[in-house]
Image (tube, rainbow, N blue to C red; front, side, top):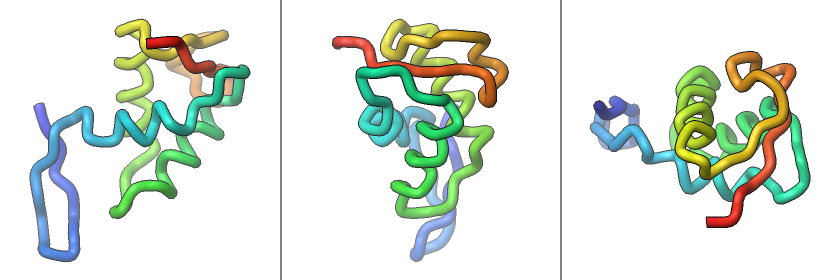
Length: 86
């Protein structure tokens, strides 16, 4: 499954993992609120992206073992994230 995004050239398709690199760059080693990582990743994107989309990608990264979480990741306001060595 992919995402449709609005670019300066119009609509474009990108892979669903398009923003994963930015997400992983905004998750420090020490625990940080999930909402902070989401907000930082949102502003780093070249086009508007919903917090819901980023939240869903974070859940996928957590399930894949690429990000550690303290708390219920479904509740973005109550979870803290930390990077995991790859």
